[in-house]
Length: 182
Image (tube, rainbow, N blue to C red; front, side, top):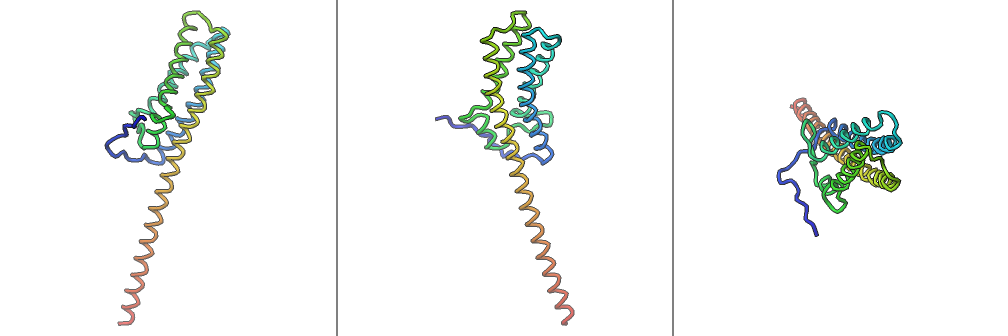
């Protein structure tokens, strides 16, 4: 049984705005994975500019994954145990996404070298894209859940603050009443 090495320092949950950006980035990965498969197949069919577009989409996909899991440049990286569990736990999202990025990179290299893609390679690409789409959906859902958790925490804070305000208002009314009585 593998024991996850969770971050030792407490990592603060990002703001709602950052979580929205993370959800968008995770959703973008889904779209990029499908575009990558499309452009790779179009490249194999020698469609003009498809290979260049596939290369750019591949670069964007790899960058998006790095930003989500490693952070940097304003991205928080994996900030919760649930995200660490998704990426490095039994589901191995990190490894599965990297395998997809590696596979598509190898296939693009074949295309760049003018080798084309065999029917088996095209089938492998389609199957890998479908599996990757599932992982990207899980990643998006995990960031959406983090946003829901933040929203619930913020609501609890607002509720506590409202209760404190009501308590102070009650005390103020009692003091005002006592002042009138005196």
